[in-house]
Amino acid sequence: MALVIDPDSFLETGSGRHWTPERNAEAWRLAHAALDRALAGGGIARVVIVCGLQGAGKSTWIARQDDDAGRVYVDAALPGARHRAPLIAIARNHGVPVEAVWIRVPLDLALERNRQRRPDRIVPEASIRSVARLFEPPTRDEGFWDVGIVEA
Image (cartoon, rainbow, N blue to C red):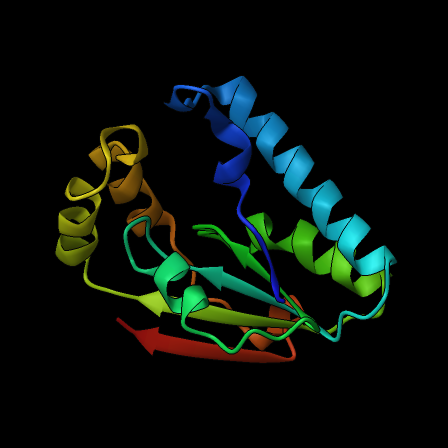
């Protein structure tokens, strides 16, 4: 079974997802540690970073992929190369190639999908618009062995 690392999962509480800047920083620390542990265990042939706007359909795309135990999916917005770099570095430290998949959707569609989420999973519209402004398409120059674009 493929492993999915979603930093937002570390924000879950008994009463739903709770976001603060401090909890977000800790969620990312835990996500990086989870990736490092998964790769240290061996048997992982590829890390796939699935990025794009919140509400783009990243989690849905991952759920539709073949259940391959040799893959780790990282499910997060990751708008810039600087956001993706720590994940690439962790994979490189373990000699595991990293692929990027950009789930590209129009901003209006991402905003509409976001509005349809459970209340504790709705991302503030300003945050989605910020990611849209900051988004840098992933490139091989960042260290990816392959970059794919999915129009969703």
